[in-house]
Length: 133
Image (tube, rainbow, N blue to C red; front, side, top):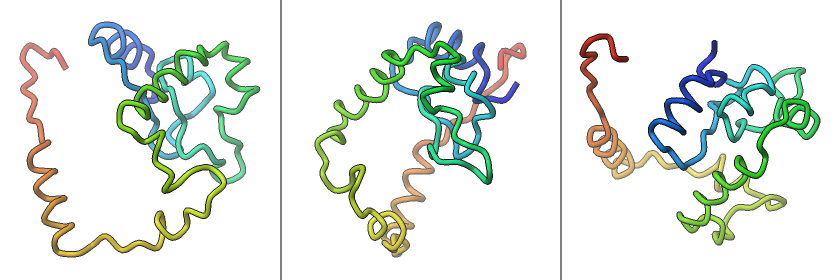
């Protein structure tokens, strides 16, 4: 079972046992079927076809799987509302986002320093006591 299709990990462990209220977004083109929607993935990324296949999270795929669309949408939207992203007009559907997304150079020495500091501060070392992981 792929991580993006593991109901045990995403629904039982993450959303139910741990009480995670955020949304689960796939890595780019990591979803392998529309079943991932009922197995805990709330958003398929990037939402565009990979190669010749269509995106799995289209209306027919989600309806066929009886996905809980209100829960999926609520998880995504609550994160957007809480973070203020829903009110950010910088980039939205229908705009020309090519410049800020693909042509902005963010590799200054200051950016590298911040990235290293954030990465170091967010690293977590897990000890697998009793094969719990």
